[in-house]
Amino acid sequence: MWSVFEVHPSGEGVASTRGADATAQGWLCLRTDVERRRILPIPSGWNTLNDAALLRLIDEAGPTGRRKRMGRAETQAQAKTDKK
Image 1 (cartoon, rainbow, N blue to C red):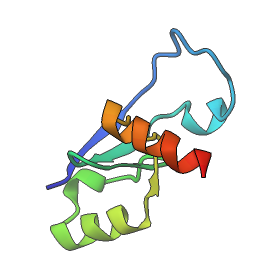
Image 2: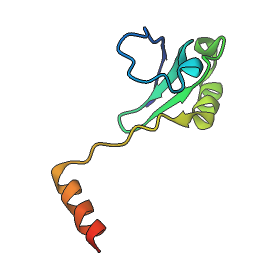
Image 3: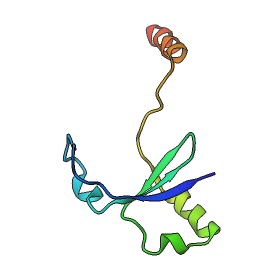
């Protein structure tokens, strides 16, 4: 199940200005337990869309680029693969 909500950055604690112009007005965050996507800018009237239209937005949205954190076993397995 997807959660959909608006994100409006405060500008505090921003270490980099890369992409700041694109995100300054906020974005629509689309999130499940295993995946996050983002839509820039926030589509007008998104909260009145029916389920089919929201699913189209989700399909078109780009991933946030966050990498899944690996657990210890996954990290060790990756290290073995990298040595080959």
